[in-house]
Image 1 (spheres, rainbow, N blue to C red):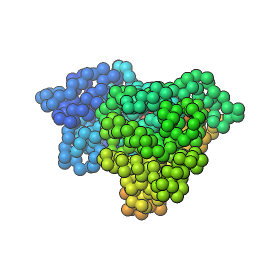
Image 2 (cartoon, protein in one colour; image 1 turned 135 degrees about the vertical axis):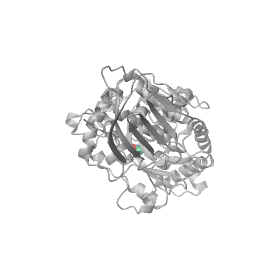
Image 3 (cartoon, protein in one colour; image 1 turned 60 degrees about the vertical axis):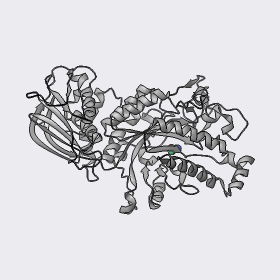
Image 4 (tube, helix red, strand yellow; image 1 turned 90 degrees about the horizontal axis):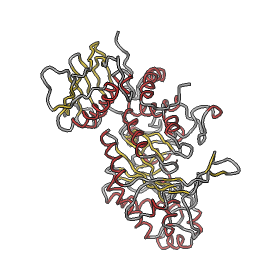
Length: 516
Ligand code: ACM
């Protein structure tokens, strides 16, 4: 009987051939040059459950059954495309570059019995792959997830696990939300107080933000990543073909930074990193030395993150302090800036010019449209799709991240039967129905849609189990939407493959939300 082939996300073209290839302790992985990096990753994925220490060799020995990985410029399937052939005498994976091979490696894993995902040796399994010919490439280049490490701190091991799960879903981006009102999480050598003070809040609210009276846990909370740890995570992601897009929030969501360096703020009152959730009025001022500070911070960030895209937040910046501040008002007058929205626009433009000069591209949440969009900015459209549509019309690239379909801190079923979430309702089927290109876009505008990602804001998520529950399988669904052709199979077909896929996640210890 041909075993069922349940690949997620669904490949562009998959043809079963009826053959079978069986992995044995004598099998070898053959790869030369850059392909060896993908081969090492594959070997590391196959080892725990099989117990086989498959060697990665530069050339093929005469008689050993092999998995061959080749960089082949003839495979013209874009940056991430690959071709995979499983025949009785061997497996051949080809791609034009390393990233394509890394995507194909994930398919090889999924062709094996689901037990391959277990972390310890599973005996009595025949480690066979069904014969197939696969041609595969993604629909969108930007696919992945954002993790908020400000509201709750995630250790580098937790972050790596999150990234490895993204890789399983052929994601390309990990958006690392590193700063917020409640915590500054990245070591900046020039400004040590950002982590000495900004990484630690005195306590944290308990229950939902809207609960009355408000309650707090009385426990100091925090953490941060050293630059060495960040480098380690960046390398880990790169080994899996994932680019990390760091986010440093400005001018709002800045209370932790202002607590560390009060001269960055607008008020005399001493601050601590926030113990509350919500939108907070303490925002950066607009002094020249504040811009200097932010540029110095970004210079260290750019040294750590090779990503072309750098996220500067830009969302939810209340203007009350700017309105009330004589210094901000005087500065606006000097600069000929008519109102606070234009001031925010000036702020983002400065950062856009700075990042452009550094050879990077600024990404911001859609509030950066207010008061006029900075010249080279990419817009992340979260308050619906209008911001993305407007930006694409103006010729800017956009990432579609509407709350309606991509906020995985929202409930996924009736709140009565669910753990505490922020609000909303985004069940799995709704995520799967998401179409990132709005109907009103022309084909020319649609080319500006880079893709999408799932948002994991963590006010109400503080453990790996809860993060798993909120993320999966919604991230599985979203990453299929982003990878597979628009004309992919039905939701029912997705569910059939998903049932197998959940057994893979079981093997990996992922505490996803069971299907209802
Ligand atoms: C956001 O959810 N404030 C981008």
